[in-house]
Length: 594
Image (cartoon, rainbow, N blue to C red):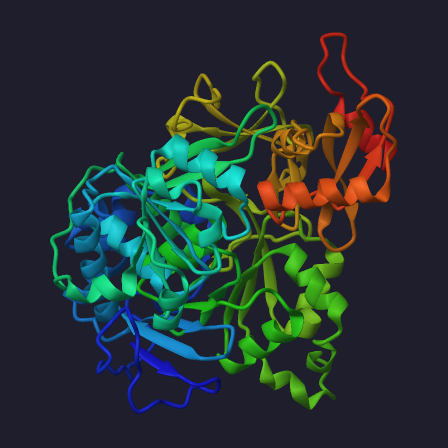
């Protein structure tokens, strides 16, 4: 691993607690597995899609590499002579850069895998991290996969309740965290093995208790080799959780069968190439970041970029310039924040502007919410590239996309076309297929979708299928050209800044406040976030609403649930609108704030 200063000037000896301190890398940052080519016809590729041909395209003469996610994303690149290719370029909050090759990831992940084995981790066990975007996170992910175990992300903004529920449900065997997040586990450390990640100074200041084992002190003692455990394609390698409108978040097992679908998205929608400097801005604590900032690019043998700093428009601009980012994946919220900041005005593609060549973007990709015409135009004029809208879910990965690498019409505002290997239909309430031009629920025809991999929630929390259809819960319209257009959800999921938030989680946390009798959470329009969360609160008899109570409620949800899921607005009302059976009518509350 090579660590450099803010401007990537090589140091004399790059030190790290992940790989040997005398290891240096000055090799190309790209694999040879993906190259630019003339775009294919979408219609031809989609209509002639063949899974066996795709598997040969990905894995060549080693089809069994798909039976272990570590082999698919790292081990095979080392075996095939690409050990010196850069897998990760990481920049921390102080601007220090670290580069890790596939060979260095191979050694480091073997050491952590041996450590996990010493803790009794076996195939099928869950191993979690609550870490920012760091090299250590990537090493733990690969180490977990190497053993055939299941990696479980814990978003760093989660509060105690969100963490405990996920750990209890998944029976998490080991958790890696750092000094900044360790206090969230004070009451959880006794139920699982805890490993502290960080610098030596972090380890010294984190306390010496019975539960937190310091990675920096024990990893180096482990061997640098261990054999990967071969599984079958139905075996899960990721344990995700997705929001729900009733009850707690639902578990989603992602099986190894998802790897070809991830490849399809990266290769034909993202159009990831060997020559790209690829940056997916999404946090790997969530599906889009974990699937397509880690798994996807490493599967293709292409360098992924991590920016540990939190979002800031100026930092985003400078990061893209400094690393000559050519292929960007982000969200409409991030693009809107870039636009509103004004820091990109100097990079307009106006021919009279000499600063435009500082950006190197070839293409951009957006997921999480619908892109509107204004944002699309701004990306083209100020970032100097085409942006494509793409749709997916935690359960399914991306299933409907504007494809950069496949030729088809891309009407602005559309979700795009079905990802190859997927057959999509629009259904009415009676599960009948609707004609073009009519709105209904988007569904995947399972028997006609060889690349589709989702088979149900981890603990059967909800029935997601009706006969041969997977029901997305999203209301969509298909046009005659084969493009799909998002209309809304058929439930009360709140989409805020690209995150899906279940209102029940927010409501239950608000109810923990001693003054609250009832609560309901809805999403209301917001210019930057798309939606923001608003809580309607009924207080207990004799208590008057106040700014102080409203702030207490906000702080409670931020601390107990998550920093992205707290209500930015609290309104006190006398009673909540309900059906005769007592179900909250959130649509009426939404109309009050429309």
